[in-house]
Length: 158
Length: 447
Image (cartoon, rainbow over all chains, first blue to last red; front, top):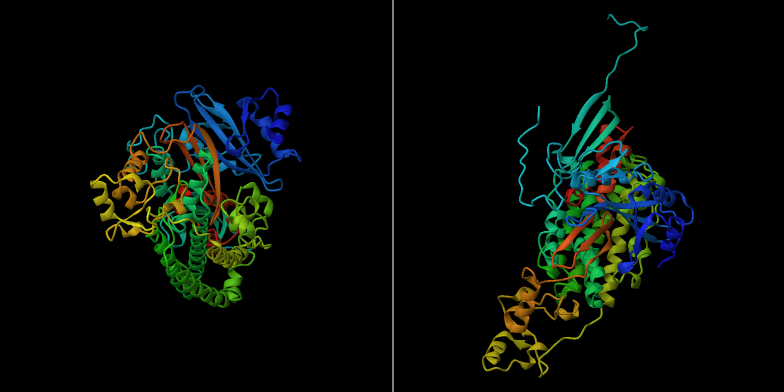
C-alpha cells in the first residue's frame, strides 16, 4: 500500500471503501457522502494536496449495484504523483457533489459526465449538456443506450 | 442636434455568434459573445459539433479496433494518439514493447508533433495575414508527411500503433528521408522566424494578448505547450518519462509571458527539440534479430506453400514468408523486432497470415469476435504527451475481448474551457490570434 493511500486511510477511516494500486495507479474508492470532505482535504493539504484535477469521468456498470462509478484523476506536479478516486453512485436518480468550486477544471468535465451518463452534480452552477444538443433524449454512454439509435435534430424548437 | 451634454449616452450590449462555421474557428466551435462596442463583455463557448461518439464506438469492437478511431482524435498527429491508447492497454495487460518498437513509436510521434506545431503556427500566422509563413510551413509539412507515409503507409490516418509495439519496421532509406525533411523544416523555421518573431505587426497582435496566469492554467488542468508558455515547467516526456524518452536528451522550453506570443514562441522552440529527439533515435535505434529459416535465409511465400503441401511445416514457426509483390506493404516484416512477440498480443504480419497456417490461426485468434485480446479485469490510465498537452486514456476491462470503457482525456477540451475567461476584455479582432495559438483540433475536442 502506498504512502498516499495510507495517509488517506488513516485520515478518513470511515470514508474509504476500498483501495488498490493495480498497474501502478493509486486508487481509492470512497463513499459519495465523503467526497466533499476528501476533496477539500486533497485540495488544501500542503503535504498531500493535488493542484490539478486532471480528469472526471464515469463508468456505467450496468449490472452492478450501485450502478455508476464517477472517476477522478488527480495530478500533482510538485510531487510528481497521480491519484485516482472513485465514487460509487446509485443508478436511480444518480447524484454526486460537484468539485468545480475547488478545481475549476471540473466544470466542463462534470458537464460532460452529466451529458453522457445523466449523473447530476449538486450545486454545479451551469449543468448543461456540452457535446450533445439540449433536445437530445437520454444519455449516450449509458450501457442501455443502443449504439444504433438515431435522433436526428430537425430544427430549433421554436 | 437634440442631444445635450447633460444627457448620458445610452448603450446596450450586442450578442454576436462567432462560428460554428467561420474560417478562423478551425473546424467547428461556436463563441457566443456579448459585446460592448468591439469589446467582449461575456463569452460562452459551445462545442460538440464534431462529436462522433469515439468513446461509445470504442466499446463496440475489440481492443485492436479502437486504434483506427484514435487516429481521428487529433487528426494532425495521429501517431501520438495511437501510442497513448496502446500505452494504456499495455499498462492494463502488463506487457512490454521491444526497444526497437519504442524507438519507432517515438520517431513517429515526434515527427507528428513537428507537423502539429507547424500546422498550428502556420495557420495562426495566416489568420493574421502572414500567408507566406503558412505556405512555407505547409511545404515543410508535406516532407514530414512523406516520412510518416514511408513508415506507416498513410499520411493522415496512420493506424500504425499496435498493442505491444508498432505495425512494421522502418523502411531502408528512412534516415536519408528524415534528414532531407528536417533540413527543409529547419530552413523553413529560420525563414519563418525571420518573418514573424520580430515582425512589428505580428508582435503587436500577439504580445500581452490572451493573458492567463500560471495558477489559472493549473486550475483548469491545462498542460502542454499552452501551459509551458504560461510558466508551467512540466513535460510528461521529461517528468514522467514513458517509452524511451528517458534515454534522450532534450530541453523543455518554458515561457514567462503567459500570453499568445509566448505560446507561439514555445511551439517554435519545441519543434527543434522534437527534431533533435528523432535524430538521436535514428542514431541510437537498436537492431533486433532478424528471423530466418533453418538455413539462415528468408523463405519465399511460394516455397512455403510448396513445402507445406508435402508436409514440411515443422520449421515454419521460426521462419518468415516473404510474399511479393502484392503484399509488399508489410514486407519489411520482421515484426518481432518491433512488436511484443507474445502470440496473444502480436497481430501477425500479412505474410504470416497468408503464408502459413500458424500465422493464419494466430490472426484468427486475435481478430474474431469472442477471441482477441483479453486484458485482465481492471483499469488503467495511460498518458502520453500529446501535441497539445496530456493525452490520457482511461481503459476499463471486464475481462472480455471488448473494452468495457475507453475514456479519452483530450488536452484541447481543457483549453477550450478557459476560453470564455481569457476572451473577456479583449476585442473581437483579438480572438483570432488567441484562438490561433490554442491549436484547437475539433476531432480531439469533441471526440
